[in-house]
Length: 147
Image 1 (tube, one colour):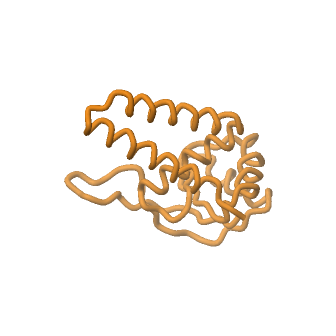
Image 2 (cartoon, rainbow, N blue to C red; image 1 turned 120 degrees about the vertical axis):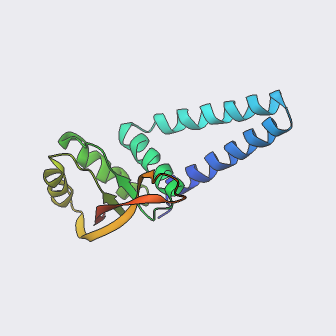
Image 3 (spheres, rainbow, N blue to C red; image 1 turned 135 degrees about the vertical axis):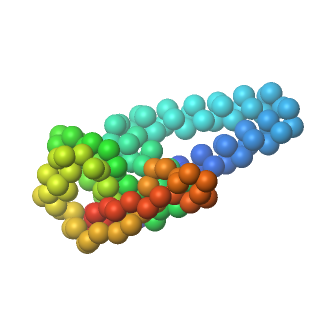
């Protein structure tokens, strides 16, 4: 199954490159065209619902940080778990990580399992921040799930 989020990521990269090239050339029309393309992409993403939007954002963050899998690092409400899993299954996501430090993270991990995901273990991922004066991201522990 095609990973639609990779396609979206590649389109976003093209839009950014188009904008940067137009900015470098001081081409206002080119910058506006890139902005319009970005707005259209956002509309297409938003039309697919909250779970899709959240996964698209997580996918972009993962790729930008150099992580192999998307990572959920913030609170996931119980009511949102099923929709997230269904969206990942339907759009080519086979693995994800969960690195939330919130007090209910273990309960959320349990809900992932109850919705058919398999906990494959613990791994280290690139976290949200870079160390002071460092090039790379700080490492963070995360649960690795298979969808």
